[in-house]
Length: 377
Length: 156
Image 1: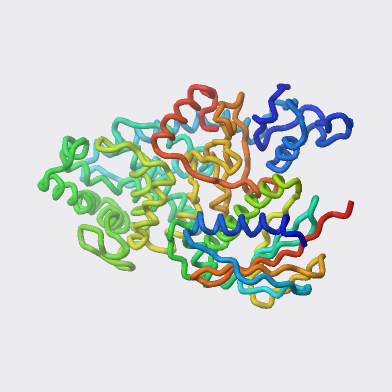
Image 2: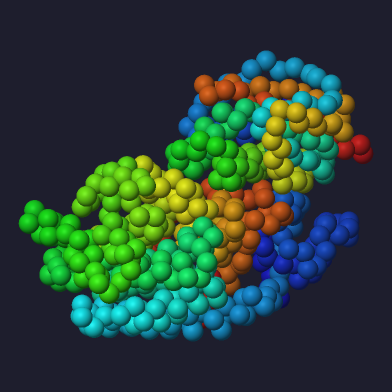
């Protein structure tokens, strides 16, 4: 139990004792009530200074997260290392689909276990060698889109493999070029733009034509503005259209040698601003899956509190589940409060704004320090 | 019906529409009508309980709703009123209500609002608990959005 000034009450907090109307003894709200925005306004309208709130019990789901998160983080790291091994040791004559099938099998399993938690975790980490973490994360996001499109296991596996290998042509481009922090020279730029064709060549003979097509076409754009061939609409392989979207999103939300990451919402905005480049059906599914406020986005509620999106609600892209970390005065809460905006009682709360990339960085650091035992939320 | 508890809804609708869609709305001629409310193509119904009782019903055409939805979705082109567009319109309603409830509480009215229910189709007819309702047309350059307010104070 904890006393808290009414000015610091946050929706989702739970009363440890009845709240009485002063001088009357009449119960305004009984103990165990989960506070909503309207209730907090009601409490504020009386001259009540403090109320007692209790430490919420962890739901089974949260207890499960605590066990699962470290395991998933480790598995993800292992996947990145395994992908690095397989891709860097790639020899055209010795490469087989089996080697990569096992890797994708692991990813499929993780997505099935808890996709939201997985996205949340992959998002917090920054890798030196982004080529391989990028491959893994694009594969995860592609699988998620594929699932929503109704793909069966075999198709999902193909999509996962294709996504994992989409950038393999980068192996033929000098490390100095793709890790360069400054602007590329025209020659370097021309070279980088050849990686889809290099990739398809490397995969020819060993991999299905569809996997080759994804490598060859993941930079093609639906409106014909892409490269290398300027293919349009249905000329582009369907899986390549999925991977193209996942590729752009993942690249935007990761740090790159030449720029810092965008916030997940900035990435969504950028994609929608360039919507002509993407298959509209896939884009719709993508927005319903990743949401308007994707996992990892720091947001401010209309009531002033700040939290992070930790889960998305199916088919409710504006109503994610948040972990609130700061009260409306900007003070760090004693512990994060989980708030599900898709629940009916919370419908009057809404996201007033998303915070900028520089604020994201500061907030992530503060949250990771304050809640080091469960920084994912 | 008192302006005191109708104005927060009009003000909130005006503010939120302007902020999230960057579309300016102007208030048209108010009128009084008798229950039931006859809907437009897209209707959002909200129940009100607490210090006030009744319903608020927003009505607009699908074409207008699509423009609003597109703005909510960062200017995504949506040709049909699909899941994304529906969720965007419901979110706009939530935002208007969240804002309205705040200004109602500042005026001493404490209400609970039901989550918005989206009813599609011109044949929608909503019978209101309060027999007379106020019709508040908000005009925008993409078509009108009509707020039908059937509200009364709780009898002490």
